[in-house]
Image (cartoon, rainbow over all chains, first blue to last red; front, side):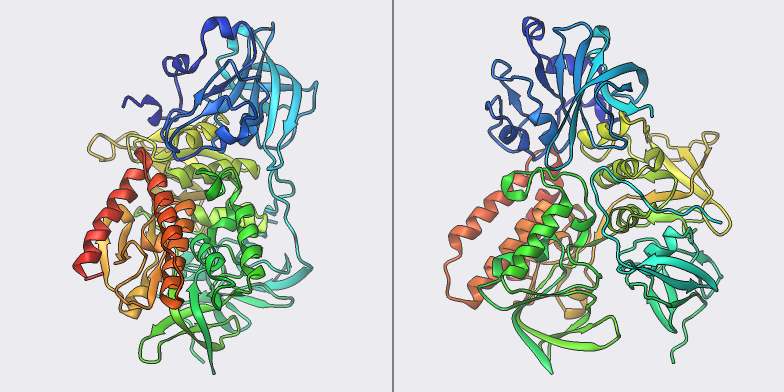
Length: 160
Length: 104
Length: 364
């Protein structure tokens, strides 16, 4: 198995591009992107999805997603114990990315936050559009992201 | 004055604190909460050095905090105890353990 | 006076509590634990668990502990905290426990489960005993149980799951994590745990280690060094990193003193974390009264510890009462097998295969 991410924990674009749905789907709706690349024993995403879009046969399989069923609702974002699921919406300009968030302080809708890459670099600023929270206190935060950065932004940090 | 290390807000946890109490460490009066260990109270007050080893006089603090390593031995109310396993009490007198403990 | 129970469990972590949940209501059970609070390491685990629904997937450890403690109490199990078990005495067939006032208690069971857990391994470098050098678990205890910051700026040694998770929890507590080091060429933990800290801005440096700790009566800085392909320090690559906390997270060792004292056979199985009591697949040791479960039987996850606790409990129940446990125990065996698949399950799986061979060597 070729696992370059095991050196520094960072998925590079060659790996991520294989996780993306086909381009016509990306241009038609918001979708969940599962950055889950290792066979770890874990399946809460399959139970979190009310549309049964995410499936796996065996608990250490990689999750499979049927994007036709995915509505981009972000329930899986809040359920994933690995915080490895993101909702990407490239149908708008600016685009939108929904990331899991378990830090303080909590941003408010309309607030501007820093946008971080998978490497933890600050690559811009964006406005918070939506906040959802699960009962186990993981937030799903939707932020505005420049279209060309939609596949780079994977975390936020409050400026306040 | 050392930086006081209490976490005020946490994204997941809510800390249930016991009654506020006071105890003494090497003549210093320290504020603590009932239900916390001597080690937690000392760390919160910025104290890291708990004892001196018998042979080389090395300074030691906590290491495992689960009662396994004995690095955090102190003398509390005249008993040698593990600071990480012993709950702090109102008025408790805690001293550094210097050298080997005395068996009464 | 000797207190009598059907089953005496030592350790109220995930393995001990899961066993108590199975046994409670069926037989009389007492759980002894030296810690001031029940739950073992679960009560400091704020991250969400992996696994499947029956392994509490998606729950945070703290919530699993609260649930299990509630369930065992409801089933009439006696939980005795601050009871440090000093030993098992075969002639009288009882354990002696010391309470917080130094008073000794004699407690007898028809069966015993020693679920004593694990402790952090130490690492050798100059000044490694300086105050401010903690096991990662100690930092976690201070933060998550007592709401105390273990430091303000941290270097973490070890990029296994514990090192990665505790680093993330430090960020949640508002602590600055300077970097995570690992001597291996690759991170040891799950990618998802690494990704969480890296995207929060914490660099992971593989092939790096700690050379020495700097400070007078407490840690002030850490000297780190790069390693070559033979794991040797490369001269001239040293860097001084300011930090008031260095966390060591390079692995755990099973806590086996009680088994050794009780006369259970011990063997060295590297895939299980070192010396472990010999046990069969029903978690029975070479002393037919004494069972083992969880990290004490081999370093793994809380999820596998809970399943092992249930297996030991069912096996004891089958011995104590004339009940058919076969279907339930088969279900737990399947559950364990599922958890031990994949890249990360290969080590414990191989370790447990070696252990089965050792067990049959001892006639178990």
